[in-house]
Each structure stands twice: as structure tokens, then as C-alpha cells.
Image 1 (cartoon, rainbow, N blue to C red):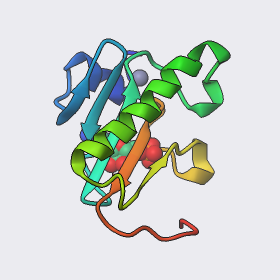
Image 2: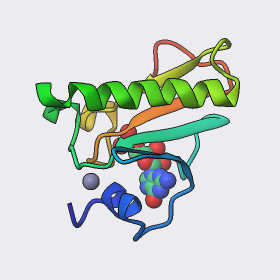
Image 3: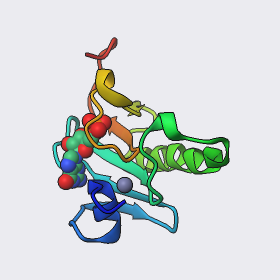
Image 4: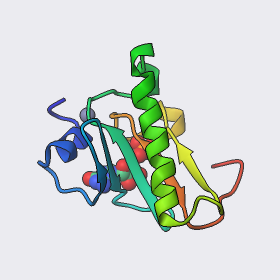
Length: 114
Ligand code: 5GP
Ligand code: ZN
């Protein structure tokens, strides 16, 4: 999608601090990190939000979640713990409308979230 910020990062039109890349998935550091590890894991194909995920996307969503776990493992935060979040629409505070899985870790998290 031409006016989508994350599509521009995927195409290299805007610079991202890339953590992982393959044919279908890109992971990059969040520009405004909320924890020592704050990585965004996104599909390269534009999907607006979790509301727009179809059954044929199940494998892709699985790849996002397993990639987040792999990055957590690489960062050494797997056993201590980490949080993965899809914010969806206004009440969750979604600001970029290209689905992204937040991987947050490296500090203790609170529950319930704000
Ligand atoms: P949301 O609030 O939609 O769940 O998360 C969007 C995230 O994208 C925010 O955590 C925000 O800091 C991050 N973000 C916004 N603009 C950029 C950018 O240009 N580059 C990177 N790497 N992250 C961004
Ligand atoms: Zn996009």
C-alpha cells in the first residue's frame, strides 16, 4: 500500500533498523522503544489489522508469532519472559494500520496493561 509507513520500511523507502528478514516477514526495532527489547514483526504483504486476517493467512500469522519467539530466544529473554501484542484499532491504541506484532521484553511487565 503506497501510503503505508510499514510498507515503505519493507520496500526500503524509509530506513528501518532491521532485526530479521525473509521472503514473507520483516522484523525491525521500534523507533520509540517501550522496553529494552521492542521489536515489531510484520508481514511483507499489507494486512491492515487483526480484523483483516483471513483463514488463508493462518500460516503467515504463525510465522510472525514464531519469529517473535525466535528473536526473544536470540536476545536471551525467553525464559525470563516477554510480551507479544497486536494492537487493534482505536481502543487498543493502534496507530500504524499495517498489522504488526510487538515483541517487548528485557524488563518486568505489568498486568493489566494500561
Ligand atoms: P501501534 O501503536 O500501531 O500498535 O504501534 C505502532 C508502533 O510503530 C509504535 O510503537 C511506534 O513507536 C512505531 N513506529 C512509528 N513510526 C515508526 C517508524 O518510522 N519506524 C519504526 N521503526 N517504528 C515506528
Ligand atoms: Zn502496509
